[in-house]
Length: 637
Image (tube, rainbow, N blue to C red):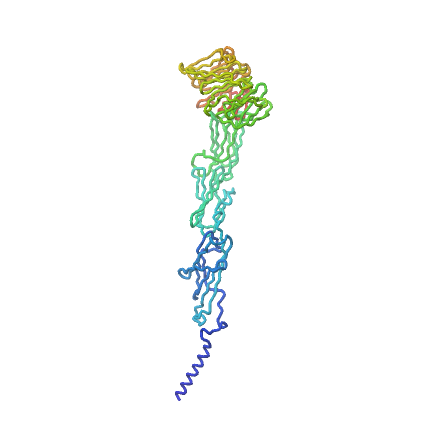
């Protein structure tokens, strides 16, 4: 009985087991497997670099970290543009990394996709047989630009209300580390680091310490993983030129515009730029709203002055004489005329023949009109003193290469090109030249040789070499070309003589002479185009002169005035026989002297400044800086 009951129990248990496990594990049909969830909504992921869009300049390793909670990670797959990345590395914890090979990718947009498979870790039969999985899929856009480094540069530098705004391209690529922006100033002590930041999205800043006139170099240095890249921009805002108003007493008023950046202004600094023998004056004005001031030092005549305005930045303690752009106004006393480097009066025409920067022209000072011009190759300064004119201004000559060119000032027509032996072994040896109204040309060279040429044929009519103990220093022809005055130094006796000769054929006949001890380097003489007499600036010694009117037939002095020491004769009016003497010593004087050789009287006149070419004719003085005055209007009582 017990046996029957036991057998029946075993039968029932076997039947129960068979009903519970209908299939072996390998026989479970797919219809019986639970599908994995499309997203594991309770997992946490992290991608490094942590950005919405990966911007790549070079290859980068991306790290994917996932927290699946109680689940288990089964596998991770990385895809780039749909192609599976084979080399995926398992890092510490639930982190996985893969390298994105930028050199193998085209520039442009790509896609990184990461798929994670995880199990429920529930212990179910389906879980155990790997038949129940969860799938998580994430995608990131990737921008590849192997030329991105070229965009590490400023995009704009512009003036704004409170300073200078600097902008540059946003560089948010994977190799970025930091930006440093620096201002390098021409003003001592004004260099400054404006920005040092590791945020790639910060790409603009305002320099609030800029001031007009300053030459500033802005530098952008971008540090990258492998090295750094730089861009620099020069920035300057020109200071507006100040206005000048000259008063009747030769003081002058200056006006200017206020700085745009008053918040960074300490003061306005104004200073005169003076010619030789001028007087300086300066003002440092802390009132930011002041825009004018009077300069009380009287200006002189004969060269340009300048006013330099500078804006001094706040907290600056150095010298105010730093370089700036703009703020400079040049001005001069007198009426405006064309400027010139060399000039000659053309007799009876109210006209000046002038040369300036490769151009000859004529200026009629009675009408204020320029008449005709001739353009030549610019004449070097060493040869400019050999631009010569005849006493009446009808002929003029200049060097062009190794030839001496002679032209008619009436229409600039060519008279002759001459080889006057001014060069020896390609070295320039000519020291003095003179030309007469009728086309006789005399030259003196450093080898003590006098040469005479006749125009228009250019024939050399005389060549005479002076030997020891004489040194030939100068030769001046009379207006009619019949007389010549030579300056000879006797090196043994240490005397210097001016000797007037009459020229007949190839012979010289002495008319008269004047000698003195010493080298007499400074004495000069001219034949008056009006009277024909000799005007002799007679050097007496250290800054001592007298001016003589000498008879051109006998070489006897007819009139003479002694010029006070340190006053040097610089211009002579052949019509009125008046001479202007400039004070050329320091401390300088605020006036010049004008002597009338007919009466011996003198007047105090406006101070002559600088060393420009000066012409004096019929009471009007013309200066090479492009100004003229009627001298009687500038007498000093």
